[in-house]
Amino acid sequence: MAFVEAAVVVYLRQILAPGDPGVSAPQAGVGAIPVIEAFREAATIVMLASVGWLAGRDFWERFLWFSIAFGIWDIFYYLWLRVLIGWPTSLLSWDILFLIPVPWTAPVLAPAVISLGLILGSLWLLRLRGQGAILRFSPWLWALAVAGGAIVLLSFMLDYRLAAQGQEPASFHWVIFGVGVAVAALALALGVRRLKWTTSLP
Image 1 (cartoon, one colour):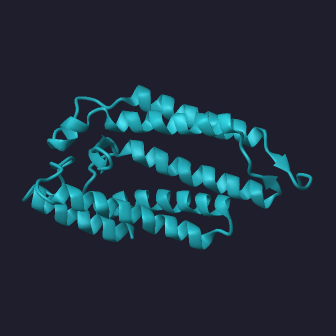
Image 2 (cartoon, one colour):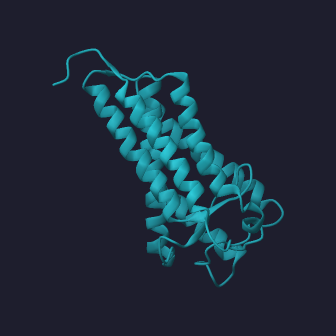
């Protein structure tokens, strides 16, 4: 699916930036293209959620496998683009990440960090659950995790007007992004520390 996604983006870049498919942030498009793209992205999330639903047996397993599938898909999406068109030229290449509800833009390194965090964090929780941990977090920890995610998304969406015009911002909001990642990681660490166990730890 990562290859399919990359192939579609190659075609779109040829349409939106003829002769320069490796451009970092082509315009979001005109007419029906942005609407079609938004629905395509939503369909991709449904597909990834279906993977989690089929792989897991309950809410936690389905959510964690969805997170793993999302992270793997996102990383391999960029790897396939690199193979197909030689882009991104570096981890600091700008990209339009998503279009819902407005264009998200960031250097490739930022979504790669999020994807790697999703994979590692989800595998960690699955391993702990296999050892007898009861995955149950308090509302305030959920709120902290959601706040971290919201701060990360803010760093992606602050420059949406430039992204919609195919322009690269002068710089990325790394401080805001870092705070969001740190808050989310703190929520995970505190949650794991407070886990209860059905059996004694090995």
